[in-house]
Image: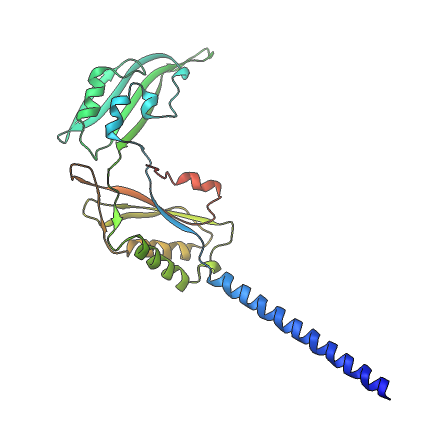
Amino acid sequence: MNDNKQLMFRIQEILHLVLFIVFTLSFIQIGRTQTSINKCPIFEIQPSSSSFIIQKEKLAEVKTLKDINPYYNSSWVKTYFSVKVEAYIDNEINVVYGKSDSLNQDQLNLLLESDVGKEISISIEYLPKNNLEFNEVKIERFSFLFYPEENASYIEGDESLENYIQNLLTECGVSNHLDEEDLVILKFSIDLTGIIKNVHVIWPSKDVQFDNYLLTIIREMPSWSPARYSNGVAVDQEFSFSLGNHESCAINMLGVIYK
């Protein structure tokens, strides 16, 4: 009889222990799920550009097209017909021609005297180096800007900007709209008065409504301080907003500028 009581007591102890473990594991799992729901994916706001960016003080080092555009390859060229440089001086377009990948003195002077904040364009008309029977003349174009010494900035500071966006993302339950491998990219500009303009999606998520929500977040941000050159001239500046998996190959579309 005593043996039976002891056995029953041991069974009850084991059952209590099993129930405790099950309850504890369930609680931990709920906690993990809740953490996952509340966790905000990584987001970044960075200056970006679809044009090449160089610092004006480094123009003294520029001698060739490759010094401006690191992707330019002169080995593709058999014959140059013209190299046209277009830039603004006192808000008027100026054009200077050359005939090689080495910039002549007039072209270099145009770059040095050009207006800050205005895009400079270069067009290369050339005959490619190849073995084709009918070798056609090609035209390659690219443009660049001078990098402003002072980036546009959120008036209330970087930490305030981060909190503003994080709170709005948390409110909408961002983790319900993005999978771990997803990335969404927006671009926008800060104009020379600090107003946010040209907000658009360049790499969408799988949720159009969520993308529209992100557009609203960016459009409704308070005004910024505009980017400025060392002489105090304000200039438009483009930014990228990225949210999600920053290991994605789409990250190359950001055009992030690293000063």
